[in-house]
Image (tube, rainbow, N blue to C red; front, side, top):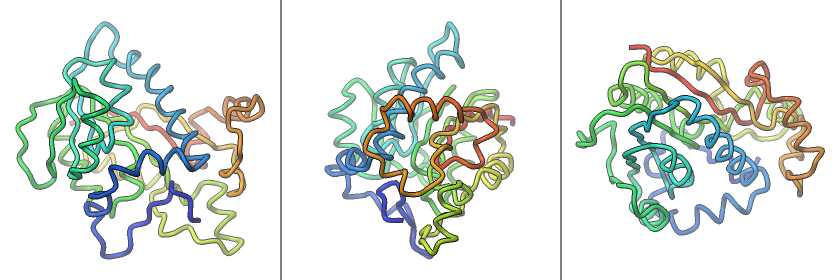
Length: 251
């Protein structure tokens, strides 16, 4: 599997170092992969509906962790009050500041740095947990838990599911899933161990049972949209190549 959606971390490597110089090319890389582009557009459209439902009549104080070039920030900050993006990559943040000049962007490693950014009602983090090494996932979730008020929300995605139908078939037929390890139930246990409970999940692309379908030319076709709707139930989350998860801070 050599799609841009799969950003493998070599055993022993630190995912923190993987995107330091990728700001100038990252958006083009996403746009150049049919499934990555579809996934990004779907997630943005879904967040436009989801965030107002979570905070009816309220403008949440918002943090986008590992914000990158502000793909997610650019959508969610319009639905919230004060918004902050955090990343450790200067090149990513340079692009983010151009895209969202009204948002405060901070260069910091929240697992190590005591950044003066306050507390939040909502945190998002996309295209991070599926790529990061397990120890970094834990450190990040603990850091985000400390920054969230009780009963506030964390919204993440998990786009490297080794238990998706397409990944399982790819593996059986000799394909390389490039170290994918974060299946839905592992992520659920990880969230719970760090003080979060999943309250909802939305599978993306669960109907794509072959890896070759990730390379489809037209994800905007009526057929693709019907299939997406048919497989939109939470019960398909463990089998989807991507899933958007809403978790509540429990303690």
